[in-house]
Amino acid sequence: MIEFDDVTRCYGDKIAVEQLSLVVSAGELFAYLGPNGAGKTTTIKMLVGLLRPTSGTLRVCGHDMADWPRAARRLVGYVPDEPFLYEKLSGREFLRFVAEMYGTPTAEVDTFIQREVERFELGEFVDSLAETYSHGMKQRTVFASAMLHDPPVLVIDEPMVGLDPRSARIVKDLLREQVAGGTTVFMSTHTLAVAEEIADRIGIICNGRLERVGTLGELLSDAGTEYPSLEEAFLDVTQRRQVGHASVESVGDVLPELGGGDGGG
Image: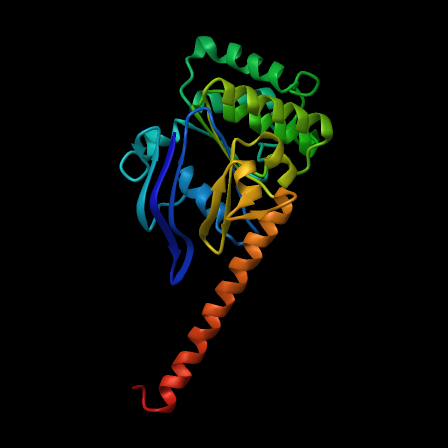
């Protein structure tokens, strides 16, 4: 389970994520949508322990990320938007390295690696150097590394970017399989069709604030408005929020001038 309780993250004077409160349950796939700069990446970095909230509380499986960051991080498998592998290692060597980093018992390492090789169909290339891999091969290998230690929480940033149709199908099927087994999946994506297809619930963030949360059906019937697609709902929510945000900023720019004109009274 993932729990955000009134979480805010600032960079200097800029608020990147504002008062985020959200619970993602065990056995749920949550899709996190938003335009560029909305706060998705900052949210994910806090969730995997790369950033600390400025205020509020973030818990992973009951562990406070501020008080028990190491314990919480061990419960998370993380797939970043850009797959990183050591180019002079083979996929199998990389998976062994990751397994050892997570403290997998030596006697079980080969078994765990072989399980992921079969899950993600890595057999044809897993013993070749990573420098020879296509983007899809790298992405599948990174997915395998994230699932090696059987984490109860998976955090995935843009899972389908650059994947060929076969690789995308493998990943989508495995995500649903993991969720059916009780894993919590938090997935950031720009691919609305993927969210429509596999997410249990969807959240839309814009300008740092979580604007909508619900099932696909709930988002398509929002506040009396019937949307024909998630794309229409997403565009309406984010455009209205951005227009409102711009209006507030404009008023903020004008007010000091008005105050200055009459002596600041």
